[in-house]
Amino acid sequence: MQGHTDYIVAMDSVEDWIVTVQEGAKNGVRIWIDHKCICSFQCPYEKIQQIRLSNKKHLAIVGLDGYKRQAVMIFDISEI
Image 1: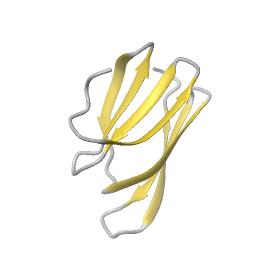
Image 2 (image 1 turned 60 degrees about the horizontal axis):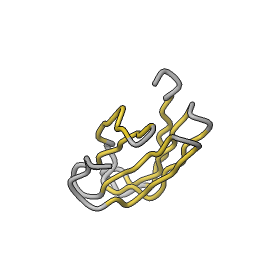
Image 3 (image 1 turned 135 degrees about the horizontal axis):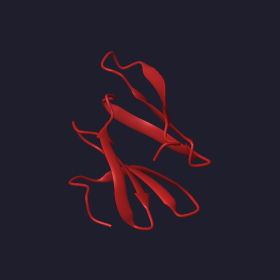
């Protein structure tokens, strides 16, 4: 699986789905199905602390915002 340009700092999986996040100024989030990247986006958090994939329907990301406050963002990924 190629696609990230920096170190992977968080990863979670459910069955054949894998979600990975790279560190750095561009926190690239990638969703993989059967070893193919089917979706990628940049997370607005400065530092990702944890991710959790829930039943291929939701993706929760915990990280620090621009003010160094811990925040949680939940994405609906059921349409992927």
